[in-house]
Image (cartoon, rainbow, N blue to C red):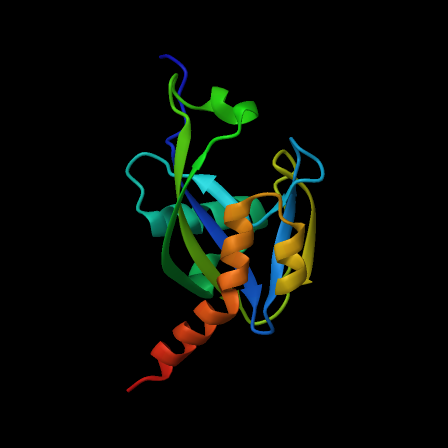
Amino acid sequence: MGKRFKIPVSTLVVVYTAGLDVLLIERADRPGFWQGVTGSQDPGETFVETAVREVREETGIDATRHELDDWHVCNVYEIFAIWRHRYAPGVTHNTEHVFGLRVPERVDVTLAPDEHLRLRWLPWREAAEEVFSWSNRQAILMLPEKDAAIAAARSAP
């Protein structure tokens, strides 16, 4: 069997607390690159299944026990050249689907050591300044609005 390439469709999950602190994780393959939970879809998975799997793999958090919401935001971006070898020849862009995962407080995190070196919980504004990708920054900056809208929808009769 030949090399299995990554699917150029992924999820970004902003993991955050009720107080709007955001979990950031530092990439093992690029120290200094901080991000939220991200990962490519596996064949046959829904976007929700991808988000739940990636959160579990990268942080040890069971997203099904917390408030996981599809923010209905989709980003298309050029894949960094350093990571293109993971995709089929000619693939240059990825489509990312954004989710939020609200946890009640800063929960325990178990990093996948082959993927991430360190973690930090930061207030959302600070977190937005620390991430390396524009799509992570954009998602974090949407957090207060998205969280308020989700709370309002849940409390509606």
